Image (cartoon, rainbow, N blue to C red):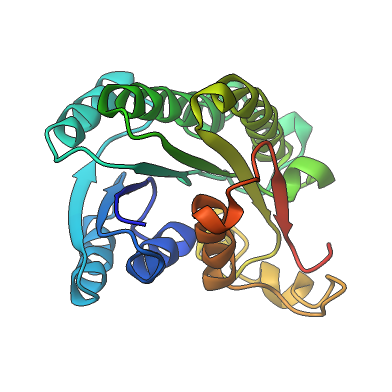
Length: 247
């Protein structure tokens, strides 16, 4: 598949892994979005280009719609083609119980994980319609949407539950246009998000608890994402795929 793949949060973790593997799945051009980590985004872009692809590093604070709009204005200047979106960017706040979920904290989590993701999807759909080449969207949810993450990150879990529901409605709405919408729900994955949530040892404590007996990798999530984006999954839409080792 030749086309343009937009990946939010591509400076690290699952987003970076997906970008690194994208060229092998036929995506010749990759938008490497980042929020704060320019060095990580540049590193991801250099790998994409070493594989023979074209990488475009773009910054946007996903809690600010105007910044998302400006990013997509730049993207719209590129040569039209089929579009893929990996709606991956997300944040988690430090481990906390319900009493510590201040309005400010919840607004920050929801602002990126829900409002930002919806606006990115909206801008992508407008671009797909403008270019007339269709495309595919994969939202990156979390097994937390099913599990609830009690005493840890129930605000994060709620944000991912919202993303699951958004995926279902988006898929139904876009199916008549030939645009597919799916999601993956990663489980305990070896990325830096655990440290950002104040629990750098989380995988040491929980990594062996899934039925498969180990944590997953960002590359394993990327494989699932790229499959859902591809024509190999041409009859899959409205699907939410658990990548959680059975957890």
